[in-house]
Amino acid sequence: MMLYHPTSGNAHTFPVRFRPRTCFVMTKLGKTAPPEVTAVRDDTRRILGSRAYEVTDASSRKTGKDILVKIWDQILAVPVGLAVVYAGIPSSTLANVFFELGLMAALGKETLVIRVGEADIPSDFVRTEWLQYNEDFESGLNRFVDELYERAEFFGIMADSLDKDALLAIDYCRRAYLLTGAECYREQARALFCGSGLDKRPKDSVEVLLAAFCR
Amino acid sequence: MATKRDVVQVRNPKTDRYVKIDRDAGKILDQKKSPGPYANIPVARRRSGDKPE
View 1 (tube, each protein chain N blue to C red):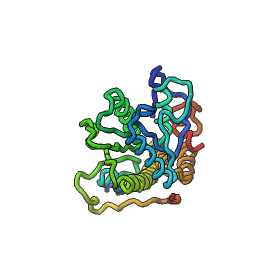
View 2: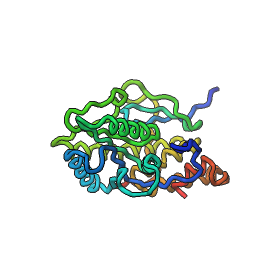
View 3: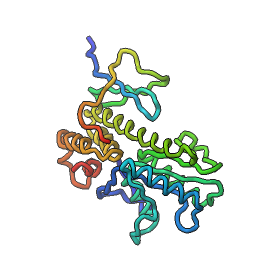
View 4: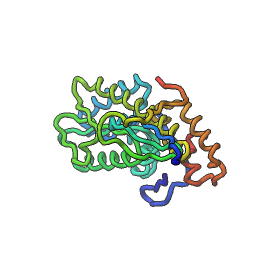
């Protein structure tokens, strides 16, 4: 897939530094975030941590870079995005959250909206899965992680079945690898990459950049 | 005589619908509109690899 830098519009000509089994949380951050958001983030970190999933957000690391570029890099790197919305969320924050969620959906990432209280969800996202933050939150989030594994299994079968289209099969392997961190998907992608002659392409070509995760 | 294509199907867990794939062409042909598998088309299983967790 051709990727374009969010501020310059230039095509990406360097490999993405992937972070398998990592979830990017999009919500109000900082000292002005309400206590229920802090509670959701703490619970999410605990529940996902118990499933060997790491949680990150826009405040996780200081890069000195443009904030959108920093978020873009994080979104590209991870397989899963969680948007936390609550009643009374500032409209500017809500716009950022759904912009980032849309980016993630377009890039083939798995997404989930966590709804605190009676927050409104924009109509474009009515088909996106959402989870209410209540006493069933832990079981709901665990079920979501189970579904991520099912999806990874599906991506693996798709990669097996589409091996005549090496680029597409490698991309399915990449998505399965990001969700699980399982080495078998990297090995499968490596075999497809070398077996189809894509390894002869220039090192900054779309094909080689796509397969960079397996090399 | 027409050659028989190597067509399989896989359930997409996100939509709970079966996707039909032509393995010879390496192409996704269709996704079923209704629940349940396509008739007379084998369901593909994972050929290789371990299962994490």
